[in-house]
Image (cartoon, rainbow, N blue to C red; front, side, top):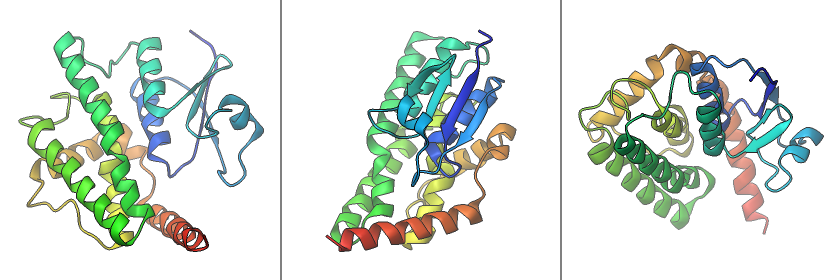
Length: 224
């Protein structure tokens, strides 16, 4: 249990932040290694030879890849301050919403990465995702897991900070307060949790980073 924990990530990634939030909420000490994705370290390539992506958690020399798989590992390895409910039905419900986040979440990144008709479709898909969460995921709840932050909140964490950045960069409004009052209340509650608040990337720095990256993406797609 006292084996060394290392996390390879990038500061602006919501997927790295998922793991940081989980480790901090559980009080697990770890060493953070910032990766430059344009010049990936030999350790990252060694630890994740299949996808060559962050985040990668290395525990006692053994690598675990993919943010939600890392979260499941963290939950099983360090059961203190549980992120999953103990009740079997509530646990199944949490897993449903985690799967939903993983399947539907990429739509908001397609809004960011594309333009024209492709982007219009991504906007429609993102709004569908948000409507489903608003109508069914947060009914009479402060957090997805009722009264305290849990693994589903972490899974949807990218909506809390990254979606607003995408909206501003692309110039489209998706998460309007009058249409999504429950989601807006959840974002406020989520960001007020001290560990989340202290470990969110700076919004202004995110704007610069993601604006530059979008320009690169669109330029390279026009080059083909």
